Image (tube, rainbow, N blue to C red):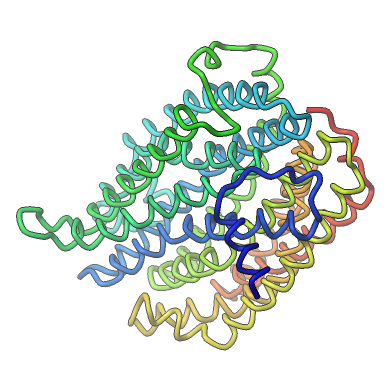
Length: 464
């Protein structure tokens, strides 16, 4: 028992470890524990918002607005994740080569490139918030009700980008503890601020849905301040100096080469989710949309920790390739797959047995609950395959092979999932249920294709 306690203490200590030398199982678990908790905290933002706005007077409008805004923000998340993949791959490779200074320079250049891209998208979201909601299938009255929420959330794009990107830098360095703590700090602030800003307290007026957006943005900003301290001031393996921000065009070209397909990879996936959300809204109406968004938030709460576990594969592949330990890199991936399958089996059982209870926590509207419960039960069918697939995708990304998962996503989501969802929901008149069925079907296909490509081993030849 003492051995396990000491192990967990080490996982939470943030102690720098050479993951190219220690036992593979220990390496996976040491990285996975803080990474899973980090990703769990990322999903808490939306769940906290959903819980509090679900008890507002216009709860249907509010839940739909939160869900549709998150769907649109997923494009911004995609850019942040794509850039963070480049950061993780480059930093991990340099750390594996025992070159922390070059890892820090790479991190600075990724931050420089990302800032400009995100700023443009944030401005667009601020100006066209109401139009975006209507385009997503929201009724004009619902869009007018939620536009300020969307405007604030879209306007905070730079903060969102920094939160994802800097955590990607620390994950690449193997310091998952700082990444985890930043999101814990951000979420604690959000949980405290949400009821105060939504319902009001003392001289602070009740701001309703707008208060939820402000609470989330302030919470994320506090998390970013914590990250920047450890990136610019604290004595860590990755330490960025101001001189590192001077444009290095050869390094920027390398970053763009890795990040561009990485961004497309997640934009392809995110845009498919946007299409599915619009399809649910148009075939099932406001209650179906609210139920689907509730189910998605619950699903992401449980799936994001699995994504965190799969991030361990990304770091281990990058660092072991940097140390020229190719067999160890592959073994790390398969060990991570084993643990992720176990985790996703447990999640599937939770949704099947307690789906109705979980949904009831967020809404008491009978029709919304029914749609959400059905969505959870159907989507959970593919969770085990999804658990395998996300490890495969992260393994490719950690190796710097961001094109392979991009093509896999394009095939799985746009050439299979969307046509299937449209056919089932409209041609066969299954409505939202047809959309729900298309999700596990696509994830299963993506996993099979990704696993075959991983075993072929082309990723081992990628230079970063």
